[in-house]
Image 1 (cartoon, rainbow, N blue to C red):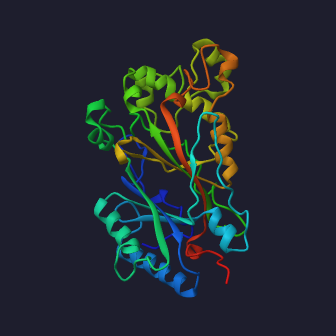
Image 2: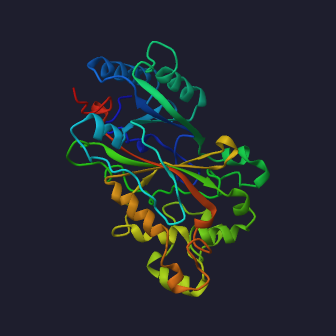
Image 3: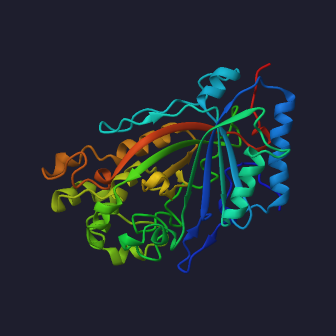
Length: 353
């Protein structure tokens, strides 16, 4: 199957669950790398050759392999003429103090099959003929999963529902709560046909979260007017009546995460496309949060609004983190940003002689 022009164009290959909700690839892997030798036509050809070989070996989609290669501010600022093309991330709330990662590039691989995922990783960063060690040094590898049953198997002691694809016990991806791939595709400029990515490592307090009953979880994750039974049946979106945010907070003294974040939509249309997946690496349950958007400020705006710092204005029981969505249950430990060029330019884009 031929690959689309945009590296980020994955969704046409996704399956769906019994209710029709999209099901992204079950196993995902992020590899942060640095360039270690001067750029050259040979380096470009070698990387493109290996990526092409992987694509020829495995079909495009979760049954084979999906991938993107993004390049960070340190690449564009230090090795191309396009300084400032990708903004460096910043703190997104007053209570976080994340490490700001500065790798030259990010490889995101995804598949329903762990053996395919590991084979593709080994082909890129192992010791074989196609390995990139002469040109790229692996800085960090982050692995995780998303899919019904996987969180339950990973942390069976928590009682996570079997049908949940993520650690908090609910679905986060519905048919209408994502920006479309078309809307996040950059129309012109050096990244034309591509997009941008904001990548975070988030630690989750899953034990304290799952000590709450399901309706309390639904109130915090969606809106105080939403029950767990209703949330479990969401298909097209996570209706949260965000237009009534102020009155709902005043009445219930609770901010719903989805209700707060939905205020960042434009004409009720989401502006970011989330590719997040769960992890238990290092014994620290969490999320690798990958957000794709046309401009990085779309993520920044959404994240700032999601904080719901104004919640305390409407009810004294609401604080920056207290009774305020999921703010009290997660901590962002790392942030990084990338530009994802179209497929034809994914290998060392715009490198300068």
